[in-house]
Image (cartoon, rainbow, N blue to C red; front, side):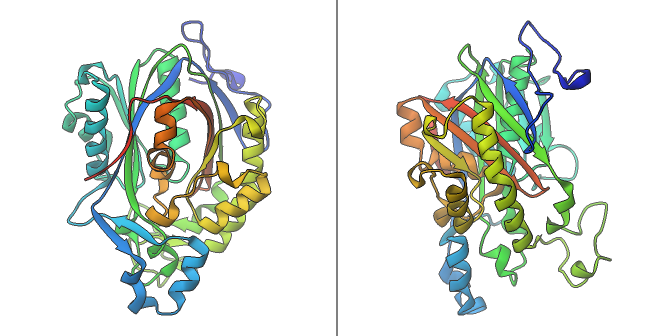
Length: 367
């Protein structure tokens, strides 16, 4: 809990410090004695190639692909939800780590595609996974920034003594919200879920930066479908109900303005230099955007893994999916200094800088 004046309340002599003089990019928080033990990502089996859209979009398809970089993505079907992907990942992870289910103290589910408006999907996941009754379980409705936010929450719970082992489930099935005629979204988004196991450990320091600017909320939004409707707004008047709207230009401009500063502030807050990192794992928003961000932030392209070409933009699952695909072998073999950076819908952004590995489990499975 944050104490008055911005400092975090001390627990067990190990306070979670929140900087009172935050950089322009957001609030700085420091956690300790909590580490990642392993992670598993899960993809639906249905693979969608760009040829799937050729008849609908014709010559315009190539123009979008050049910008986004997406060539294949995976979509759910048959009523499959994000919780199904996360349940599959969690079972694989628990088995690989040989964790007794009774040893899990908390479950956090981060997604913008929950099973229901209520109850919280974390509650049903607790039961499905056979975790003991009485654990901490709750949902966090964040998207592109959700993984670093979730790491911060999980590590705070461990540091303060609320939990010793936490499962962080993240993911989105954005395909169910796509307008099939809107090439800005239907060509971009893929579906995935991921579960990360975190546990108490003496060597587990991390630095986080967390920020929000809700003035950009209407630029990436499902304008109808909950308890407030934007249908009276002119730009949504003819937009299909319950589908995802994105003003790509505005989101792009926000990202190029805010994220290079976030990356620089993240490095500075951790007391590192850019050369002190093995990799910068950015939310896989758009291939052109990622390359431009790397140039502005002066990141060596070899330290910026990109997998959006194979999986699309998987929202909150994109960062762990990079860890279990492009970086799986590396984090399984050795300790890596990583900067994890999420940004987008909200507008919301967050970063976590920490050491990950060697991990007992870093895998991608299929539902």
